[in-house]
Length: 112
Image (tube, rainbow, N blue to C red; front, side):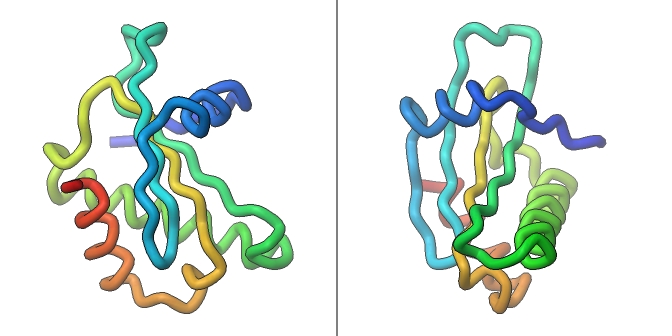
């Protein structure tokens, strides 16, 4: 299954403004149900700001978050609510965190 990602800035802004935020050591998870999008299912957005580091570090952080979501979708799709948008915002500590820790933290965020 291919990840459907958010592309438009307005989707990220809506998620930031109206979405439910869950903070963690390595990332921030924003959940947002967009009533205007009825035909789209599950959508994901990944953000890494310049505070993370240079372009190489930002891209690595986004790759790690994409791999994390892909793994969870294959493992247990029930964790995610249908017709919701999820935005993951990287924190600086994500570059040094182990994948297992990030996996457990994301599961914890989704269960809240």
